[in-house]
Structure formats: C-alpha cells, structure tokens
Amino acid sequence: MIKAIAPALFALGLALIQPAHAQDAEAPVESEPLRPVKLMTLEAGAGDIRREFYGRVRARETVHLAFQVGGQITQFPVDEGAPLEEGALIAQLNLTPFRREVARAQVDLEKAERDVTRLSKLAGNAVAEVEVRNAETTADLARIRAEEAQEALEDATLKTQFDALVARREVANFTTVSPGEPVVLLHDMSELRVDVSVPEVLFRRERSQGVTFEASFPGGSETYPLALREFEAETADVAQTYEITLGFPGDVPGWVLPGASVTVVARAARQEGAQILIPETALSFNADRQPGLMVFAPDGDGDTQADQGTVTWTPVTIEMRDDTRVHLVDGPAEGTEIVAAGAAQLRDGQKVRRFKGLAQ
Image 1 (tube, rainbow, N blue to C red):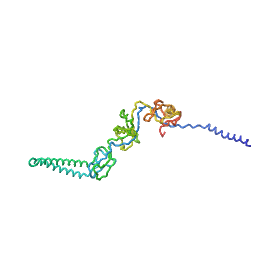
Image 2: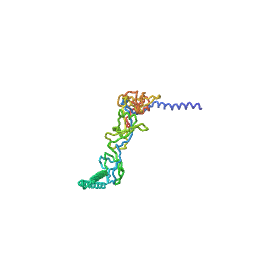
Image 3: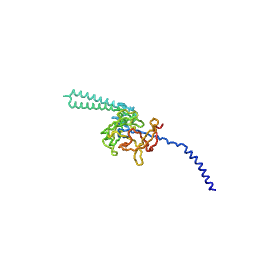
Image 4: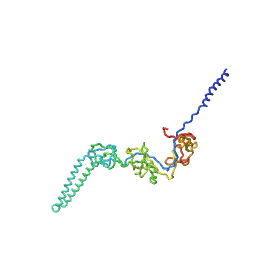
C-alpha cells in the first residue's frame, strides 16, 4: 500500500514545483542600483607643502592701565566690550585736591621768586652773598614742586594711548584707588595677531625660502593673509617647534575679537616641481597589497550619459610626503577622472554614477 502511494505523492509534488520554477524563470531580474561616487580629476600642482595649525586670535598687546597718583574715581564712562579710539577718556579722579596743590605750589614759587629779586638788589654790604644763593635754591625747589603738582593733576585723568577694546573693568566707579592699582584691562586693537607653533623644518623654510600664511575662521570660507611679526629664537623643549607670531596686515571682520578660534594654513614651495597629489581615500589595495586607483570611464559622449560610467581598478606607484599627503609617482595620466573617496568599497568593473549632491 505504501509503495503504491509514494509515486503518486512524488508526482504531485513535482507538478506543484514546476510552475513555480517556470514563473521565476520568466520574471525579469532587477538590476543593481548605481552607486554614487565622488570624482576628482588628476591635476599636477606646484606640490607645495601645506600645513594647518589651530590657534586663537589675540590683541597686539593686552595691558592693565592704572593711575600714577591715588584718589577717588569720579568718572568711569567705559563699558566692557566697548571699543575706544586713541585719546578717549577712560577714568578720572577727583581733581579738586590736585588743583588745590597746584595753586599752593604756584603761590610758593611766586614768593620764592620775589625773595630772590629782593635779596639780589640788596646784595653787597646789606645782604650776604650766601643769603642770595639760599633764596635762589628755595626758588628752584618751589619750581620743581609746582611742576610735580601740575604733573599729578594731569595724571589724575586716564586716557587711551592707542585704539583699544575694553576687556574688563577692574574696579567700580567712586572707588578710592592707590597709585599703580589696575583700573581697567585693555586690548591694543591696532593689529590682531595669532601665535602658533611650527615644526623646525617649516621654520627653516620660512627663514630661507619663504612661507605664506593665511587664516580662516570656523563657519566661513573666506581666507585672510597673515604676515610674520615675531618669533621666539629657541625651540620648545619637547616638540622641537618654534613659537611664531603672525599678524593680520589687512582688514578683518568686526566680529573677530581676541579669543576667537582660527585655522592657520602655511604653504611652502617644494623644489622638486609639479606633482599630482591624491587623497588617501582614493586608494584601494588588491590582495597583494598593491595600491591602485578606481579610474572612471563615462558611458557615451552625451551630458546625460556622462553622469554614469564604469570604474576600473588601475595599479599605481605612490609616495608619502613629509606633510602626510600622497604623491602619485606613476599611474593614470593628468586629466583622468578617478574616484576620490570610498574607492576601497568598489569593485573592478562596477557601474556607478557621478555624485552631485544630496539632492541628486
């Protein structure tokens, strides 16, 4: 009985399976979606050394200003963060005691001068010569006290000697201060500067061949030239670097203040001439660890078809430069389009499309 049923069940299963296979054979196979790739064209550049450094903007000088005389502050019109032009009033002490001292010194000077005039006329038998000399000395001392009183009166008013930015008020208005006690912290805004540490090799190039510097700020694409202003004439103990000071010779945006973050790019020419430089992300390696590039070949000559194409793995010879960039020694010719990023994720002969942005 079992032997009779088995062939029937096998035949029924074969009948059910065959239509499914036939249906699958007739169904179209979905094509693999084209993978977007970022492309770049090989170009021979100057082969410049390019280094990036990060720092903060600072003022040319940051100084505490103080009165050279003591007294009570009666005028303090500056606000923190406010710009000041050269000669602007910062603070002023109560001038009444200083004016009174100037008047007292002037009276003493006038009396001493009258005594000199009177004794000089009586010099001889009536007045000894030594008395005349003593009167002249008293007049000289009175003249010095008058000058000191006048200078103290002038020192009771504090003004800026440069274009400044008020960083911090150290005391409040109507405070009685002593001579030399800091009153306000000012930034000298005549030129903004940046301090960076550069390697010894780059420093030698700057001294001998010349290095150009430019700065950029976070969130912006515009660059601003920098010029060397100062440098420390000895290296750091650990990193063997030189501390250099760069200045902005041109105008910078008004929002750039001391403390702002800045990226400094240094460029120095290489003596070996033009080179083709490629990013590390353009490299892919075969099983033998041979480096290669994915060369892009567009499909057709039309603009629409040129956005699609095939990538072919091509072996290359490379050299790592001292600035960590990759120099293409031997490989595709200048003007060839290659995959700039993600080449290791592609396979030889794969169909791809040109990446034009997230909206594409």
